Length: 178
Image 1: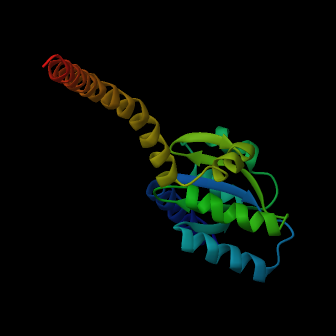
Image 2 (image 1 turned 30 degrees about the vertical axis):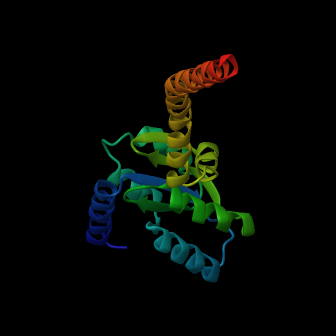
């Protein structure tokens, strides 16, 4: 590879790093070309973009960007997955692929600017979808409020029922006395 080609790849990597909110570094040793194509398709469908890169070019692209935090994940052949936006759908599709193909391993990456190791990425992939988590949070917040509203409504309702019962009792006493 010529020097100008390498420089062009470094610039492309820097632009991809700037555009992506999240970066996933994975090992793919032992995957066949057909399997890699299926993995790339699954990642693309989930909203990410996978690229196999040379570590030396990646180190150049990461110069001045916390390169030392990602250096431990760069052993052996690596593939980068660039994810703009929510990384969980991409992690889920990669995790599903990894269940069927043990050769794919999560090494680490950046999720929303925070460096995470492969184990944390697997845990993040096992979380329910964002919408479900928000629904659970909303249900948890609504529970106490619903109980408060029911309690506040019970006070006047019980007062009215007590007054009606007292009125009926007096009406019954008045009829019995007459």
